[in-house]
Image (cartoon, rainbow, N blue to C red; front, top):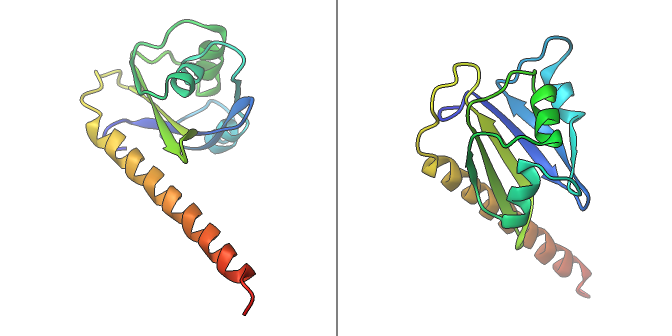
Length: 145
């Protein structure tokens, strides 16, 4: 929230991306948190989210026009952002989570995102450590006493 005024986390599933959390999103009716959790973007169709999953690289710039990018804008309140950032969180060699952020409502240019990318990389490392520790504990539990 120090770099962007709105952000959404998407979990990457085999065939889709699903919203799991948000900050700063406002919708006309209902809860923004519920709206985000009900947001699904297929990985079989073109979108900025799919592009980041495939390329495993951060995207920063104007949101390209596509059906699913328009769907995303609609789900996040309907206002068109001037610039977006999508950062992949890579865990165990695969993109596990995407962070989407934009410059709404003020539409000011998004500055450098190095700190954001660093925080997401640190979170990914923490997730990897947690998974490894859980696997190690499971192996210890299976060893005969």
